[in-house]
Image (tube, helix red, strand yellow):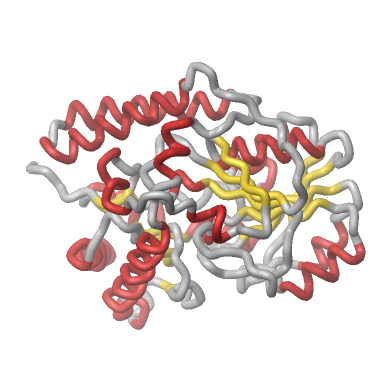
Length: 362
């Protein structure tokens, strides 16, 4: 079998150079109402929140639709972990939240592929009744869309930015108040250096199609992920990644993603009309991480797409601690398929994804 076209999965090292703009400093400008902190990963940003507030707040209230990496930073810092439910339209079950939220709670919420699960009015009402509660928003799915004065202003915002672009490491934290969140320097740079090595190997693999290189970079990424899992410290972003981050034209990335999203939606609309898939309509005007659809037999479809070079991440396996809390969350987690639409790809690639999906479903 010859080389199969590859779409999705981890960024290679060369992919980011296409969107460099000198002195861009995108997030400092877009989040001007907040103080910007840069970490090694989104998980490190969450660790810093957990470390900073654990003397005053004993509990974290998380969405039942989340991943293990959102749970572990609080678990390793001694928090009581609780989860809230969702309604069928992926809005937060406010009645459930009101039963579980307390003054000593860190309340985490997030947008899912551009779908806002809770209104500004509801957030303000919750804050009024629980003014000592820390409101923490995870904006990983909508990180490039800035927060403005017309929106609810949470106490803290976090985002994993390395999921958006080819960075060895990178997570962001935006704080409303000028406080120094605890963070350390990863002196040996283990995580960053491993990922950088893997990204460079992937660039070489994409150029010469040597399968041994693929095996090697996947193994390195696996070790880097384990390093992140085991670390209890909240590390700063590496100097190399911070330098790259300052140069990236995220407006160009946002525009490319939106174009790909709308093109792919058009290309697979017939599959939705024939009830082969279900498309969520809310997200096409914002730049998202992926293009989410619902399919039956998700794991089988995902596996067949991968064999044809279309790699769709699992969003997300429900954490063990949240199993049984919310049927809606578990149904979403078991049926959602996240199609790649990022800035590495063009019209031809979107057509390949659509044709491959149609073939697999047939």
